Image (tube, rainbow, N blue to C red; front, side, top):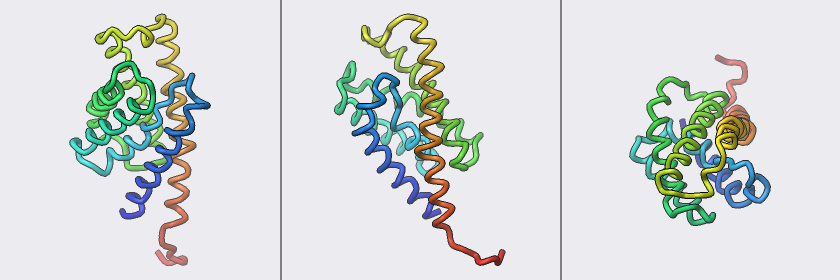
Length: 171
C-alpha cells in the first residue's frame, strides 16, 4: 500500500511539471493535465478530500492561465469529480487500464461541464461552432486517455513492478 501512495506523490510531481511546461507544446489540444492525478486520488481519499484537491487544482490552473472567469476550472473539476466518483467502484485499482479509462470519462464530463458553464456564464470564446464542439468531444478525451496511459499508468506500473520486494522464487 505504501508503494501505491508513493506512486501518488510521483504522479503529483509529474502533473506539476507538465502543467508548468507542457502547455507551450499542447495548448491547442487542451489536455487536462490534472486528470490522471485526480483519478488516482479517487482510490486513496474520501470524496471531501478529492473535492478539495480538485478545487486546488482548478484554482491553480485559473491562476496560472488566463481562464475565462476565476474559479471556472475549479468548478469544472469539482463537478466532474462529483459525477465520476461513484464510477470508481466499477473499476479495479489497476493503474494500467483504470487510469486511462477513467481519465477519458473525466475528460468527457469536464468538457461537457466547461461548455455548460461557458453557456451559463456567457463566456464567448468557449462556444465556437457545433462541429468544433463535437470534434473536441471526440479528440480531447482520447488524447487525455493516451496521455494518462503513456505518462502515468505505464511508468507508475513499471515503477511499482521494479520497486516491489523480490521473493526470489518463493511464493
